[in-house]
Image (tube, rainbow, N blue to C red):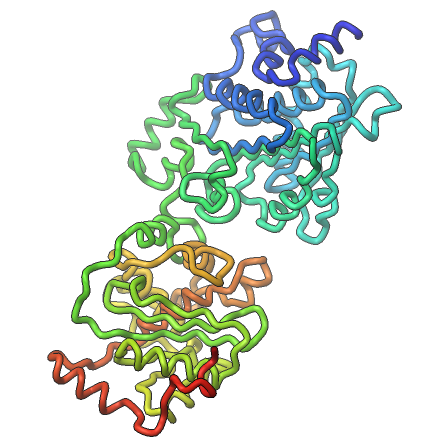
Length: 499
């Protein structure tokens, strides 16, 4: 046993060496025809080892893959390496579902534990892997913990000052953001070796797992890779080729199940991630003769801001937008009126649900051309760009927004808004009602699952509510603006405009 302890210590920063040493590769039995890890597994293990050299920085590894690449085996090796090469290691292993955790992740761990040369040093049971030494069984252990949004203590209590912490998430794409956030907040111990490794098939193009990869909000913190099933010796190449023939090389089916890359269209998102992302990468077009339409989404105190968003044709960047927290309806209307006059807009379209009706009424009193957008009212016949059938006005204007994103330009990061615009646009899910019309997820339901209200996106969507008349010539446009400019109201007066 002493020899095992000494041998294991030398692999503290060499997980690849550990895996080659710890299992009977090529010997009679289960590994008789196996020569060691796949190339991609070797790459992850090398990255992990290099990261553990520096205690001052957490090791964060994110891996997506197609099917059948040996992900569960790698997860098991990392667990066994982590606990056996550093005294009093503590860790948590979770997965997308309790069933996945018990029947896939933990079953695979049991296989490799059985083959582990130093297994006598540890005990594996139904929910934990721990030291066989009774004096260390509570301080040297890795626990299997199904996640729960109602019970986050297991992830909030991840502390092990001066030692090693392992957090491993299997099928991480479906683990809720709140569990990620709780885990991240807990991993703050100074002088502690922190290892956070996440694995999964790229089934969803939003959420914290997606944010670990290219163009994601947290990509700079993670060392990420995608594993193509075609490049792994374990996979059935005939089946893969049949999928590619049936679905196409760049279909979402092949992207997720073979190439290990995120789908273009999330199965539940109304607006695809890549469509929104491409709009943020598109530069604003040259000035055009299109009218300026202002969309207003009205909040009233609380966490939701009011948004004033001008759009000119394909350009939803140049004119900027205003994010107003803590304003009442009169203040919001004053700001909208001031913006209308300053940028010489043609129309203001206001979400008139709730307190928004008061903003629309006040704008009309100020003789500002205003149209109410009642999200819950009936759709006006769908969208000529996609021919879809919509359940209500909100779904319809989002449909028009989705069509516009194919050539429109938008910002991604918006000052004063916590999440990116891409997150807002891809946040709402959708379904079909009894009439087989598209119904968007409500803000209330979004909040119940921890998703921020898409206030900025709703404001931009309002600009697509109705077609409007706008004069064609410059002289006609100047006359139009003069006609709708109040003579007895100055929206720039200090006492009437929110500073």
